[in-house]
Image 1 (spheres, helix red, strand yellow):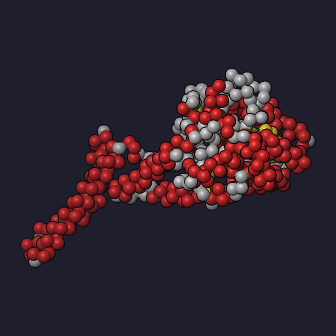
Image 2 (cartoon, one colour):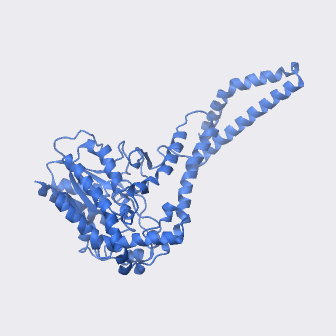
Image 3 (cartoon, helix red, strand yellow):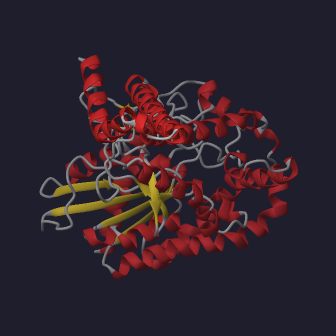
Length: 457
């Protein structure tokens, strides 16, 4: 059947060129009446045409029998956004699904960038309680990141909705609110920062009449505390997404040229290959790390600068809460769990200790490229100190105080984890979670939502 299909495709290709072939051959047969120069020209044109058709056939066969060049739209999980740099690609299915049960479906991004277990309409029934969860990859449901699998392998990919934080939170809230229909919508995206979620709320989420918006953030915004403008950091991603946009647009070509189709397919393959090659190139720097060398003495030297820089982030949180308040939406900020925090954390398992002590949580070369060791060490050390000391020593208490003063919710997951068992493996890497980790976070968020609703009454 495949050979028959290929033959049909080739015949279809030839049919589109048949008129040109007949014309050229007819000219060639009457070439005796032409000059020698004319005959040469006709012969050359005929040769070029057959060479072109041969190349077309070759490209068609390459596309037909090369699995590595078979791509179906949407080709990438994210795309450029004019509002917040990048967004989840509508229609993208995360086939690398991490399931708790075999019947759980792979998550598919809907037209608005959401993941849910049913269609989400802008119109909300009176009895519906609607929650939006925003944040980065941990909240989105991403599995383990390389190279933490060198310590212990956990599933990589994306959790099914049922196994994700959003899905488990929906189940818990539905049990607590049996007389209402509960919807918890995953409105997160990998690498997303707080200010991008704020723009996402203004542009999209606010139109869906949420009752509660939760920001589960912190890790992707750590660079803000060391003085990197969050808007500038996000802007560095924009150019690659514009390249993606051009590649996707080129692959929307529906014509008959297999040469063009092959070139477009190779562009997709090359872009994916370059992304993997970039990570591989800087993989060695993940292991140039010693947790014990991140000392309190070094932290005290930059503490005042971290406090000054953190104001920009805490103001963004308060602005997000204020916008939600204007719309009569309850807002809760959740400081996401982070492996490298020293004071507020669960008793770490042997696996978690091994990951924490030997693999850096900040390999900035992945984003910044070839920079000097001095610059990389300076920036990464500041990030390490922020995660290990600053959040526990200053930031979390400061944010809780501001939340109480402004009337929105605040929860720090790390501060809720001290009663967990050492044997329970919670982290799969620097911030992504196991099934049990997702379940624990969902439980904490359900308590925070119910507590905030009681407070606002």
